[in-house]
Length: 82
Ligand SMILES: [Zn+2]
Image 1 (cartoon, rainbow, N blue to C red):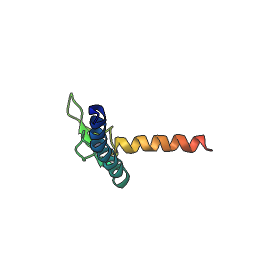
Image 2 (image 1 turned 180 degrees about the vertical axis):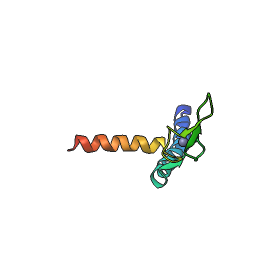
Image 3 (image 1 turned 45 degrees about the horizontal axis):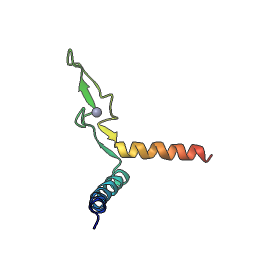
Image 4 (image 1 turned 90 degrees about the vertical axis):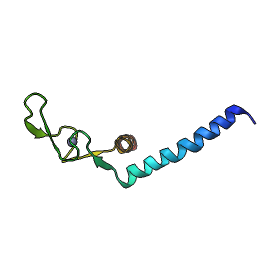
């Protein structure tokens, strides 16, 4: 058996379930906890530690990267077919 074919089969059998699992996770649970503010929705400034709203999320939850990519392509396809 060709060693490159064996390597390709091994890569596909490992990468395909991981990719499909992440896609399923993005479909079932599109939002995740923000790591910057740890889900609180508030952070402090670096200099004087003043509390302010987190700029990376909306009330502690942010959209997963995979879901953001899906939404972008879905929006592009919708606009192209209009
Ligand atoms: Zn946040």
